[in-house]
Length: 102
Image (tube, rainbow, N blue to C red):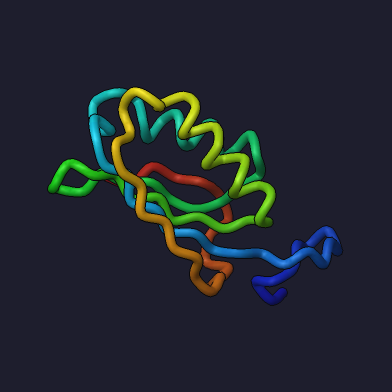
């Protein structure tokens, strides 16, 4: 099935988002919390630490799902996130679940 539809027959467009978060985002449960929030919103993708101290999130879902995920992260980690660089990308459909990568 093409990446712009859900197998359930929902024709809402799927979008891909890549975000790099800066601040105190490693060693505070950021990745595990991101996975929990993503799964709660039905978002698939990955989250991983970068060597420079940032965390990168790459995910796919409907726009409303991705907005809800970002809102949850901003709210939960408001005292930790000092910068966020997010970019929309073309979806690939490569993800089937949400995973924490090393």
